[in-house]
Image (cartoon, rainbow, N blue to C red; front, side):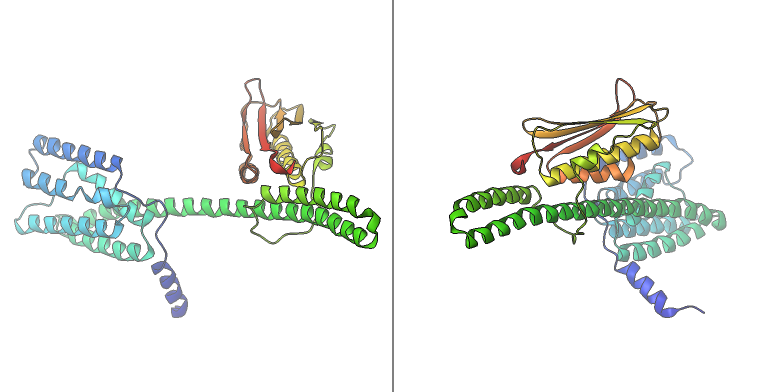
Length: 376
C-alpha cells in the first residue's frame, strides 16, 4: 500500500528544493558557442540536399539558439521555449506530409535539459521535466516509427537530464563534505582557544587575588596581569574568525606531542624541532596536527619508504613545518584526502598555507607555513 503522506512529503521536498549555486550567465563562451552553432547550421543546410525545408529549418534552428545563453539562469523558460518550438515545427512537418527532420547541429540543445537538472530549482525540474516528456512524445509520435523515435528521444533527453542531476548531486555532496571538514577544524580551534584562554585568565585571576590580599605585591601582580592579558589578546586575534562550534575540553596537543611522533619504524620517523621560544598554544597545536597528518599519510601511502622526516623551524615572521619521505614518487591517494583538506582549512584560518606533492629529489613532501602574528 502506498503511503500517501510520505509521497506528499517527498514531492513537497522536491518541489521546494532551491536552485543550485553557480547558475550565472549569459557568459562569453555561451555567445561564442551560439555563434559557432549558427555557422554550422548554415553550412549543414547548404550541404544537405535530403533536408526538407532547408532554409526554414536553418532559420528556426538559429532562432532557438538564444536559449543556450539563458539555460543556466532561466532553465525552465529555456526548456519550455525549446520544447514548444521543436514540437510546433515537427507538427508543421506532419501537417505538410513531410517526415519530421532536423539538423545534426541541434544536438547542442541537449545542454538545455542538462542545465535544467543541473541548476534548476525543484519547481523548475518537475515542471520542465513534464514539459520535455510531453513534447518528446508529441514530436516522436509524428514520425514514421514512433516507438523507435520515442526510445531514441528518451535515451538522449533522459541521459542529458540524468547527467545534469548526477553532476549536481556530486558537487553538492562534495560541498557538504568540505563544510563538514571546516566545521571539525573550527571545533578543534575553538577547543584550543578554550585551553589557551583558560590558562591565561586563570593566571590573571590568581594574581588579582594575590594583589587584593597583599598590598606590597600589587606592582608585581599588575605586571603579570598585563603580560597574561596581552598574551590572551594575541590568541584571540588569531582566532577571531573561527569560533563556530561548541568546545570539547580535552587537553590540547602541542610541540611535546609533536616530538613524540618520532619512531624507530619501519619506516623510521625523525623529528627535529628548532623553536627558539615558546609558541602560542593554537600555533603549536596546528603544527602538531599537520605533522600527525603528514606522518600518517606517509605511512599509509608511501611505497617502499625507509624514512619519514619532520622538521619544524621558526623564522622571523612564520613557523614552518616540512614532512618528507623517500618513498616511490607514484602512490595512491597521495594528496592526503580529507585530512589534508582539513589541515589546509585550519592553516588558512590562521593566515597560513599548506602544500603537498612529489619532491624533485624523490619521495613526497608536505610543507606548511603559519604566520606568528600577535600571539608570539
